[in-house]
Image 1 (cartoon, rainbow, N blue to C red):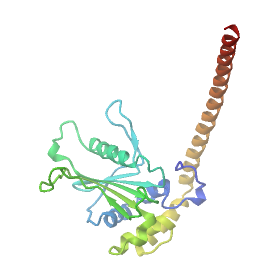
Image 2: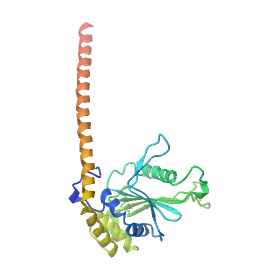
Image 3: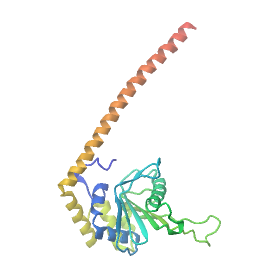
Image 4: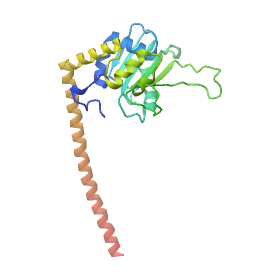
Length: 250
């Protein structure tokens, strides 16, 4: 489902548009990262918020939800409400894209920042009913040598939030994402910020504008599909006529 498919009044924090707007609050964004990754984060800088990153000259661009950095790390936060089929390949691509976006032509490889790609999934992306899936890279032949390329990929399954027992703040955040009910002081703040975002008429106008574009594209696709279907039908009729003629002639 497109992120612009739901009516404005039904949007919650777990919808990309509201999530991105709430994460514009630096304090909330910083604390959100700290809770998800169980780390301390210093002052963050926004690299982009739901803007497109074009890789190289002819490569495929991507649209990141929230992309920030602190003094020596980058964080890409993606809110995911469905379409988990290619999520591992998306994570791989986002990892490379974030590196390209934060390096310059003469950057040395040893200067690459530690990076975190975080997918916050409302439902279970892998079907194992685990609240967290953390990627670990090792050498196949031995684990004695650490494979430390300073990259981390984590997938959260908000639907399994009740299984978290040792981190109440994380449990509250995932619970809020899953059923839109605040369970802590921090998620109270997320709820207030989400409601404030929905009260912004200019953001509602932007959202409705994107909805109109989406509907226009759908209608265009339907028209093109019908036209293509008619053309295919005519062609098939012609083919059938030729086949029938061949049968009668021979």
